[in-house]
Length: 98
Image (tube, rainbow, N blue to C red; front, side):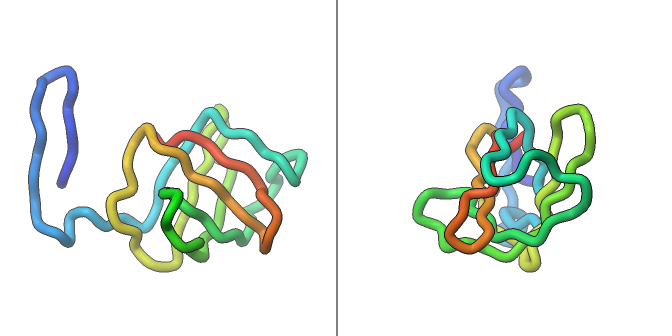
C-alpha cells in the first residue's frame, strides 16, 4: 500500500498498480444542488482539476462523511485533496478526501 505517514516521517512506495483505488471517503462536505442525500446518488466525480469526470455513486455514511465509489479504479486519489461531484453540468457538491 502506497502512503505517507507524517507522524512517523515515512513514505511507503509500491508498484504503479498500488496507486489505483475504486473508492474514497470525504468529509468537510458541501452539498450545493441537493439539500441532503437520503439514498445513494449516481454522479460523475473529479479528484483533480484537469481530470475528466468519472462515473461514480456517492452515499452518505453518517458523521459528516460521504463515500464515493467509482465505476473504474482511479489513479492517485490523495488525502487532503478535493473531490467534486456533478450531475451533468450541475455541481452536486464536494468535500475533502480523507
